[in-house]
Amino acid sequence: MLLIFLIITYTTHVNAQGYPDYESGLKVKINESGSRYFRLLTWNQIWLKYNENNTGSTLAGEPESTAVDLALRRIRLLTYAQLSDKFIIVTHFGINNQNTFSGGAPGMGGKKPQLFFHDAYAEHKIWKNYVSIGAGLHYWNGVSRMSSASTLNFMAIDATIFNWPNIDKNEQFARYLGIYLKGKIKKFDYRLAVNDAFQANDAKAIFTDVAEYNPHAKWNTAGYVFYQFFEEESNLLPYLVGTYLGAKKVLNVGVGFQHQKHAMWLRNQVGDTITQDQMMFGADVFLDMPLSKKHKDAITFYGVYYNYDMGSNYVRHIGILNPSDGGGALRGNAVPTVGTGSILYGQLGYLVPDFSDKLRLQPYVAYSHARFKGLRNANNEIVPVNLLDAGLNVYMAGHHAKWTVNYRLRPDFTNVNNLENRNELTLQLMVYL
Image (cartoon, rainbow, N blue to C red; front, side, top):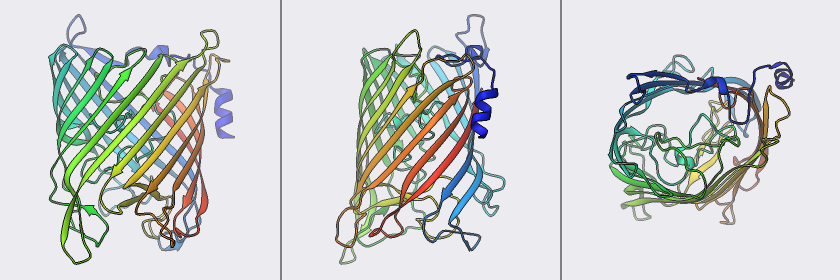
């Protein structure tokens, strides 16, 4: 009802290209021509969530079968400055995932979350648009398009999370300290990086026949290249767009990888410690196509295949803004998300014909199918992880102001031999300058 009320009463003009009044945002010219400038972006994503919790979930020691909570998904500030067409500096910081009992400072529960840097790097253009080199804490990732997804313009309510397979393990919130090359060669767009990976598994936990992060591992390499059949996308910044809302005609096909030697370790059956490499591949296609100039409708599709080798039987359970603080790794809304195996994911959205100068509507659906080698039932059969999302974006100023309502059907893996489905419903308000 709240969403319907807002749709009816909102009166700001918007069209398929976004929000015309935004122009170039908060941009300060340093010289008269504007070739030197400083730009500031800020955005907030606030979630109201209903969740059917997994079996055995608790909060503050009490059983909790369902939960309703309000949370801050992302609160961000990004600045970048171009000293000339050859030099750029990017600084991006903020907080993520704060609710009333988690996401805060150590020992503070949900209070006073830690503000930290997401990106902090500098870049030098070496040879026209063909080669630029940069270094620092960066987001020029390999594996897939979604591994460098912009959080400003998702089509589905959020990222899949398995697009960042090492999230907050040997990297910092999908970023690495590294050196990267980027550029464009005709219709090809590429990014390559060598990263000094963060130390993971500080406690040096090690298990028999199940891989865990090796705290002694260091450098990794990553890359992603895509071919652009129609209009070309900007690569000034690393963030790749989720949907252009019909403003561009885009068809891209890409492939990517990430490799880290001795990234994982485990004990074998005789007690020897052995290390294993991490090797990850991705192949994807992205389509964003305006359909009718008259009606200003458009279609957006993204599909990706991942093949992850993260060590023997490795599986990681993740629940974004988990509404439970007790009940084990599968508490609350947690689901097996990344691991050694394969993942297929697709999302499809349709920008409804322009029926009003007040708003635009975009229904979408997304589905993932994952098969992890370490996720087996009593018959030693791999149990697939299937996730279904369906939602509606209500754009009131393009991507600059939107409401999203999202329904998710997820499996409860508390008993791998007898899966049950759980429901989630999320309402998001996002505004960015």
